[in-house]
Amino acid sequence: MKKVFQWLSALALMVMCTCAFVACSDDDDNNSSDGNWTASKNAKILGTWEISSVSSDDPDFDPYRPGPEMGQIISFKSDGTFTQGGESGTFKYNNETGAFSITSKHMSSKGTVRVSENGESMVGTIDVTSDGVTVTYTVEFEKAASGGDEGGDGGDTDWSEGILDTRMIGTWTITVDEDVPSAKGQTATFNANGTCTIGGHSYTYSTQTDTNKGEDRIKFTLYLDGEAVNEGRLVLVCGGGVLNGEYWTPGQKQDRNMALVMKKPNYTYPSGGVKGRWKITTVYMNDGPSVGEVIVFNSEGEMYTEGDAHVNHYTYSGNDSGGTLNIELDKDGDIPGTLTISNGRATFEVGGQPAIVLQKQ
Image 1 (cartoon, helix red, strand yellow):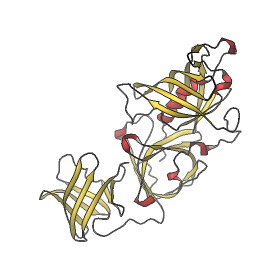
Image 2: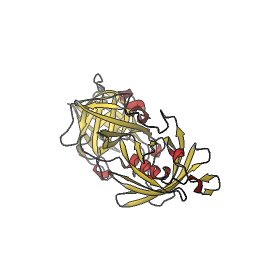
Image 3: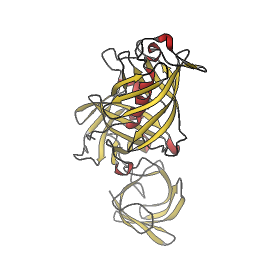
Image 4: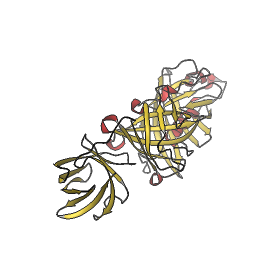
């Protein structure tokens, strides 16, 4: 979990928005209007804003591509700087046209954003570029409560404003981490104030709920000295005892994500029958899972692969020697079969033919 990367999602959002909100001109009387909207005065964009709506008709839009997301918090200051989570940068804004540009360590963006007459909302069009692909978004913002005229940090950043999903809060033991060097075996503590420690090192973090494609996942960003160093998606499983998913580093595509699993220190994986952790040793079926992957069957009827932020379900009728196993896939339907278990080794047969072989972990 120590590789440095940017959270392009959050960064892109704030980047776009930032530039469009801060007026650089001192001639506030020259603001032009467009229906109910008018180019922002400097004072109107200062403070803290929350993204209330995001949409895109762009043919290149991909819900998994970094970009603006609902619930993200952005703060603008009169000195032309902005902060979002642990990210920061500078922006410029054209009072008359609403055009903006933004610059940060990791990216730049362009767009047009206008503030409402009452100063309580904003709307605009933002171009986000990542991995060489530019996607256009329509984004709306609402004024959020802030601690001052500039929504600033008063010298001490309030990291808790970025904790929009609280399910990650607590102390966890890292059991799987594919990074090099790996943090496996280390303790990670995520506090409600947005600070965290991992293996004795201090970080800050932000979270939000990711509901793309019906998934109920936690999307997180980890910061070191104000710089985003990791971003990932996790699902809370095993009755709240395990966080399972993936994370990535700057510029990496989704197929290069690294597995991450954290569990509560006192949580014990269930056993008996099919329950528990199993490593796939043999695969006979086409388009099936990969050899070496670890599958977990828990007491809540959840079946998931470690390092994959997705959960399927199962039903099992049998004992420690085997029985009937039905794997319920959300998109591809049910896979009914029989499971034979012997000496910690299990063979799952579908239609009388072996599909996969598992080894108990």
